[in-house]
Length: 205
Image (cartoon, rainbow, N blue to C red; front, side):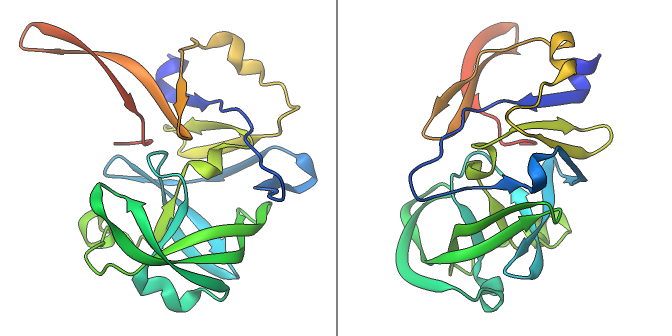
């Protein structure tokens, strides 16, 4: 069943003044492979000319790079305290601006803000067995319609004016956007008891 094979994400464009966001080259559809390991989606991302691996996570809004990759960032930086990743006291880091972030060579954001986290305890790579340099948050989803094919392990990004023919064959589910994060209600059954939960899907968790 196609519904089980293809996860289609449709989010409203949330551009703000002075921020272009990700732009597709010649406004054409883009498809590229991803790595699916331990129920996590890992995508190759070029940051200021350096190739890195990023975890795709809608639970975090901004793009983040872990401290060990700090030397690969050449941009204007500001000291900051970042709230996220389940840490109530926040995480020390710097905000790097004026970054060029390129995906599959044909999708680019020329003014992309990145949080560089300085906490040495953040180490995803050793837990999943593949190098992960940072996290690509929900900002990635705000400007285009995006389809995930977990069988072929490919991501397809559609221009906003492009009609997706396969939509007619899919089931439409209500999604609520709160703080740039998608939430969907699901039914969970445990020990013969059924509960209704609402949570955000982090594409693999």
